[in-house]
Image (cartoon, rainbow, N blue to C red; front, side, top):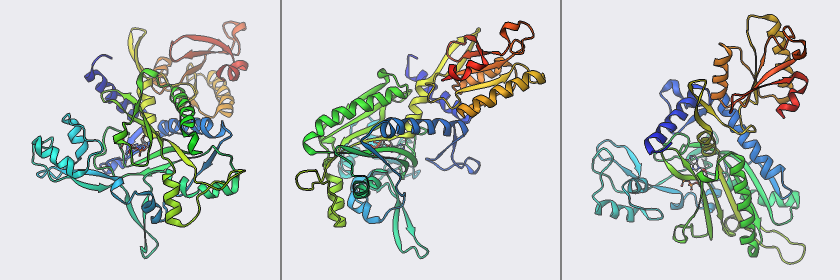
Length: 461
Ligand code: ATP
């Protein structure tokens, strides 16, 4: 890939492959869709679940200092007042095309015109838009910029007595449970609480496939530390976050760590690094964030709720710990994984497309098929291999559609690392020494190897 139009084409190809092969469908498709929503198909949910379980393995089960949590999506509205989400801090600058009514984010419109607007207020953006005589993309007059809160509001109870919100991040569920976890688990500082779950933001202009949507999943950690240790703990966590992105198969060349400049940091944050991925046709943009949030959140909740949010050390007085927050969006991770894996090469004189997914992420670990589906002996033997492997691994595909060449292409396109074919040699009809061996074909090289059925489980592990 050499230029931007080729890269944009790659992204289009990935979106189309994802739809065609059952990874990602547009939400509410039969009714014309619902902007900013996407549904995961059978292969998409498999990949998504694998990303989540690998993350949980690495950051929770694989460590002694992490505790899991699954808090409610609906919370008392006071949570969002204390966290600042009901205020201007969680609003995006909205601007409207006066003729078509189409809405945009003013900061994105400025950026698309080569003007950086990060951290500016609505009024400041207004000035820039007027000074530069900017028009909408359709060439029309623009409205004034106004703050638009991104939270979805809802009512709780039959009489709609209480206001609530669909949570715009999972993090606040962690903060409000800080005391519960400390009281029940007696963790030793530093320790973290991790959560995976849905988040909702009424984005002004959802765009770029799964990149900016209105309903998405996050994987977040609040890692509690002593104030004086925040820098050393930040460095340690950075090493783990880099390891995570490598575990997703993302190459170092496609990952950039963007140190958010001091003047763009939230007032309570002393350091934030965004992990950016080099999306085809788009360039580097945020994949995950890693912020040092001081004691801001626990302090705000302590003040607003009147409940002490303190950690009691073995010696000394209780104190509010400081916090490091790695925050990942799963949709963006899934997109990056697909972009990284998408490969075109030439095999047998044809162009082939395949997903070079890491084995631990591939929706199917292996596909099993009989050479011919109208030969009962082959089918029977293949079914028995399939049943054994399925009981062992779970994510095993049965594929007897079309000829073997077509099956290989199909499995290549969905990233299945191995295809097993049961042929006449397996039955020992041609060469007794090959009885009970099968062909195992490698997705990346197309090379085939004979492996004894008895060895298959170990081979695939
Ligand atoms: P952006 O600047 O792109 O709007 P953000 O800085 O507001 O993102 P955070 O609040 O830090 O994002 O959320 C943490 C992570 O959640 C992001 O790094 C991203 O992966 C994911 N995320 C946030 N908003 C969206 C969205 N609208 N669609 C998909 N993923 C999102």
